[in-house]
Image (cartoon, rainbow, N blue to C red; front, top):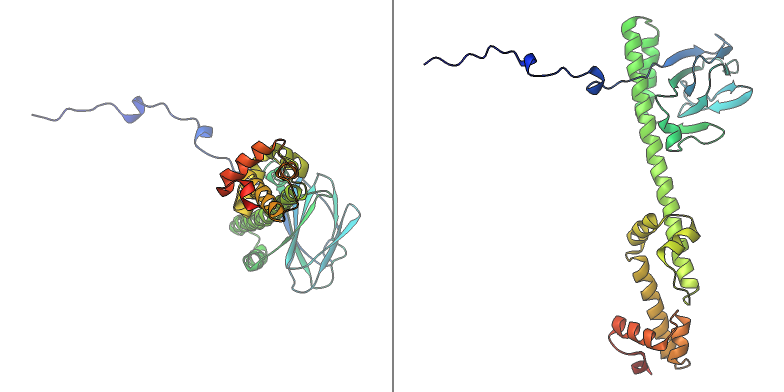
Length: 283
């Protein structure tokens, strides 16, 4: 018996996929340059996007102007500006023996900067560099001297690597800021609950008062306090009620009112459910 022959090619049974359904576009055609002090004065920015200014020399701050606004940048920081075509970059203020790297990432490629609000008015963000970025800057300087196609491709790759590291730093900083802000919201919510126990706040009421949404409040309140908003509220009311009753100076109906219960019977039921005994047994 001879094996069956399959005379059909693979392509006869498949439909070729269009390129845009498989390949992803990387539209990062950056404009970049490296300048020494005294080599050039004013530049017209060729595209809209995000202008990155990096100073090379250690311990020597670099100064420049962008549309008549003066900026200073130290070697351990990067200035990122949101710019438009035709703006003027003046680097005539560079001190002797200083260099800067300037590169522009197209607006459409990196609009995530604005989407996640990492750059705020007046459209500048200062980013602290690290040892990895410092090393990449020096490699770019070394390659820039060669001025050939291969070196240009390598520089492009290194600039993208710097961009990646900067985005990681920005996102890390942004997460820290958000965490701090949310912790402050949790502290505000606790304070509101504790200051007036006659109120019965819903999670929606609290969230609106402190300027956040219900999901964030529920999540981060539980994370930082160890209890849900409702459990914390109940615990605070019950412990306060217990202390009031044990002083012997308050009627149960008064304690109920001071902890947000309209009827003493509802308070007594909640108290017994929480502690396991009725309020009157404390007298």
